[in-house]
Image (cartoon, rainbow, N blue to C red; front, side, top):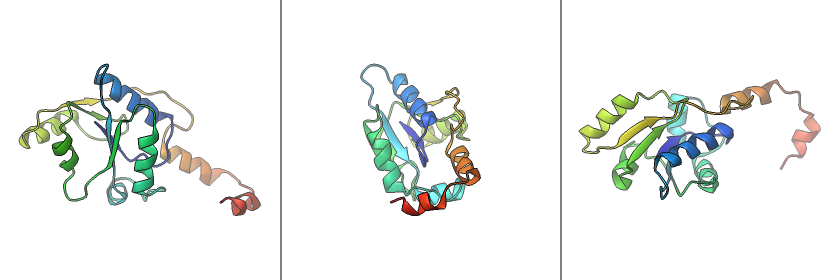
Length: 148
């Protein structure tokens, strides 16, 4: 199981999900939990893309077998329901794997937690970098007005 915001899909997301699935072995099922809009606002920024659309996009990515929007009231709800063998943490996520593992154990869930530390570096390898570049780009306003 992997989780994240997945606001503007970029190669870093693909790498994270691919590495997550590899950890499960040959017949692994990759489940992805997409952060709710409220969670994103509380921890990062206002999301560009809404939670339902982000979940739909993630579900279309190669290797993703199941995708869910997280639960506001109980962040562990889907974990408790699906009981994955492994939970992965992305390279840009500020979770301590040991602390998360201890929290899971307290809830009766003995799930391995693995941080994916390495990822391919591209100029635009994060949603924040993409947003920053868009802000800095001098777009032709006529072009933007014609976007539908």
